[in-house]
Each structure stands twice: as C-alpha cells, then as structure tokens.
Image 1 (cartoon, rainbow, N blue to C red):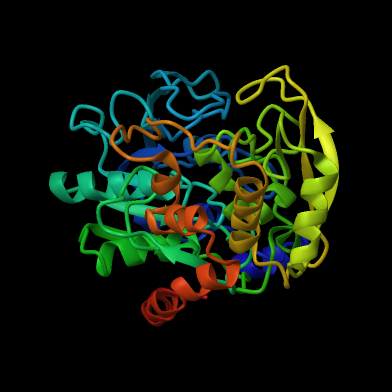
Image 2 (tube, one colour):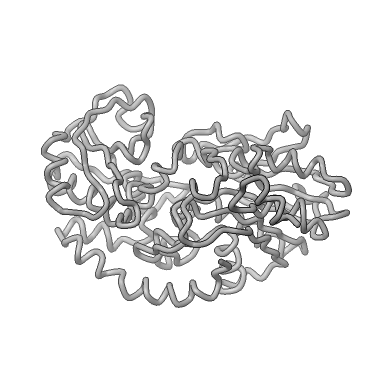
Length: 399
C-alpha cells in the first residue's frame, strides 16, 4: 500500500500527485493529459510532476500549462506576460496561462482529454494559481474535458480564517470569488467549492493527500519547499503574506528586490525607529517589529535606501497576518500622510479601480484607513461575513 511505503520512507504526507501516479492511475490511464504545473510541482524526491507523468506507462502527457511567473518561476513581476515555450526536459510545448490568455484555448486543448492541475497555493485569496485552476475548469466544462486537481497542503495551515470577503464588482485575477483574505483551505478544497458552490460545474476529481491534517504547517509535512513564486522564498514569507501583500496596493515597498520580501517593508521617507515604535505600541499578537533600513534592487524604490521595519513572527499560531499587514498600511498612512500614496492603476489587468481596492476586494478598507478608523473597527467590519463564510467553507473541507 502507498501509505505503508510512505511510512517506510519517513513521509508524513502523501501528495495528490504521488497518489495519482501510484494508486489512482485509473483516472488517467490511456488518456491524453495536459498538466498545469510550475517549479514547485515536485514530489518528496524533488522529481517534477511533468517528469513523473511522462515516465508512466500508458499515460500520454501531451502538453504543459504554466501559471503566472512561468513554468520555471523565472518571471518576476505582476503583469509581465509569460511567453509560450518548449520544455527542455520533456520536449513538450508549454503554453502560458499568464500571457495573451488566462485560460487554455480550444486549440491548446486539441490533444487533451484531461487537465491535471498540480500547483502549490500559499493560503491567501490574493494569489493567482487557484484562479488559473478555476479558469481551466470553466474551459473544461465548455469543451467536455475532465479536470483532476492533485491536492497539496495549505502551507500556513488549514485552521485559521481571517480578513474581509471579496465584494461583487471587485473581481480580478487575484480574486474571482467571495473568499476571505486568509481562507484556510487547500487548492483541492477551493476547487471543489468553485465547482459546486459557485457553479462552474465541470467534470472534476480531487486526488486528496493522505496524512495531512488541518493543523499542520508546511515544514511539518516533510515535503521539500520549492518557492511557488519568485517572491515567496520561504515559509516565513508565506506566513506574513496575507497581510503585507496589501502593500502592493501602495507606493510603500513590500520588500520585493530584497532577500526578505513581505517581511521587510518601508519607503525612503519612513523613519525606521519612529515607525517601529508606533507599530510595537499596538501590541499585535505573535509578532514584533524591528526598525531597519534596506535597499531594494528592483521594483519600488530600486536603488534607494528605505526606512521601515522587518516583521518578525515569533508565535505564528497567535499571529493575525491580515490585520498585522493592514496595521502597517494604516501606521504609515497616519505618520506620513503627506508622502504616502496609493498605487496607481493598472493592477493585474484591472484598469479602472484603485489597486489597493483590487487587492482588498473592496473599497471599504481604504475608506476606513483614510477616515482614521481603528484596527478594531476594521476587524469588526468583516466579522459577520467571515462567520457566514465559515459555515459554507465547512461543507467543502476534505481533511
């Protein structure tokens, strides 16, 4: 049995792609397969899913699809389109789903019966990979193809849920559905919710993991960490990302161009000590703010020294990343209102809305910060809708 083999190898968790290839080949045997993957699509032995599927007898892997940042994760920034190319290892055509199209075309799927999706999500609504899966599901329904989602862990655990829900009218490629900022679900669970609750209605199969439970964080799974996107180098980055991703909607650096993206935040006009003391005085749980200066090598303020803070997560189970990130935005706005600027459009191909609103999935949070509302007011503003979401969420949990 696969579970016995896994225990002998010291594995705690069997990935969906491992289970597909070792126990559920009936789902793809004899089929023409298109694989949605990137550099993080690896098994416990660091073998890439494309290489594994290519080697399975009776499985016809015909084409690869890459999400944002490319199949090898080498395209840095938002709204930099990834070209279609050829995969050197397998010799297969790689179609970018972050190019002139965000979904596979009928021509791209001409030699595909089943789309296998194997992407590592990071546990935050504001991340494009699960929407690439949703787009593939919509096309599959229209063209009569099957979709298999090989599940992977939510790296920041599957228990905590936090933040506001995306509102109608603020949909984008970083938010297609009314999810909270931190959703506490796996890609497989989200796909099931997209398909059933929000009515995509494709022929969908989720290949579950074995051995994963909701309280596990990524390093507790013994799965090797491969950065799922260029600015998500570590689990530490992913832990605070649901909060500091909001800085993408401002002219404050979220640490891109440093070795600690989403942990280092700042701008040239910020006095590091003043900002750190103000944030420390709030008393946010599980986190400390250290004054620091840093020099981004690219993106915002490239080549200019920024004052700011490094966010140190000391107790991740106590941490509330969403309100922590919004506390940073509010503090910089309150201290340096004459310098602070919201980012100008476009953001993720949305041209008619404030990028901060696109990230938040609402304009209510920006309005609250501009009015001077308290952090407690912000958290109260999403408490009812979050409770309602959690009652829906429970129906689609697989673990």
